Image 1 (cartoon, one colour):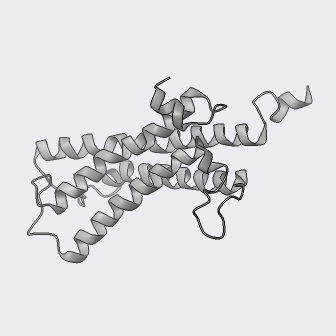
Image 2: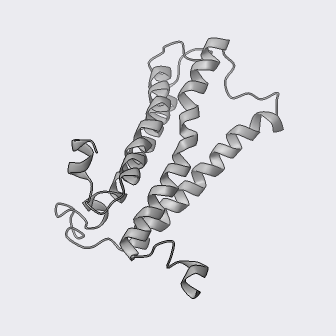
Length: 181
């Protein structure tokens, strides 16, 4: 395992989960860079005029929020996902209950999957209303920057399930029908 990944992850976290957790912020990065380029006025999309201040702030805020949420996935493989860091007022030093991390993570993964399905199906439902009308090169760049986001929901789900199993001591053998045999 990469020494940097090994140093930051907990010893009982599977290597695949560490790699998947680190992949999440990377799959969100291209779309964030595309949005920053749009705000900067680079020709990444056909857009009449310039973005207004409110639109620019919204687009930049979306980038900051999505990358921040993606970085939270790292908490599922690091110590701050099990014990709140001491520097956080009122909560520092307390153990994180597994469901306090698992429920929001799975709800987030479900919401992301729903958004992905909506964005993939929307052009077929209403073909006249495209989100962006650009040149073929701009459309290819848009696709290259946004297609990696499709990996976010399954990566988050897999890391969350690994976190839950590790924190609760449950494995595939002790879950469900196998426990009754």
